[in-house]
Image 1 (cartoon, helix red, strand yellow):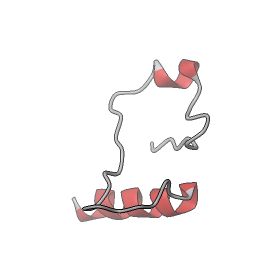
Image 2 (tube, rainbow, N blue to C red):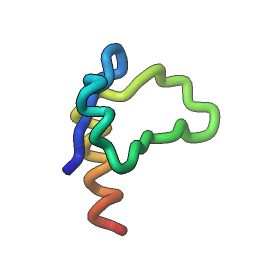
Image 3 (cartoon, one colour):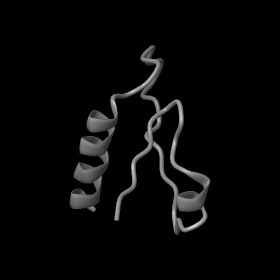
Image 4 (cartoon, helix red, strand yellow):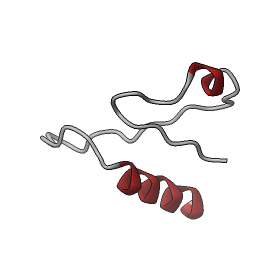
Length: 52
């Protein structure tokens, strides 16, 4: 199961206690973007899960 949280609020503490693994998307090079839309971030992570 993939649980996504937004940048400002993340996920609830109750859900965080149930996590087995926490992942994030690293910045690439000197990227100046402040954040990713949660839908875009979800697409990137699902693609990586499928590739691996």
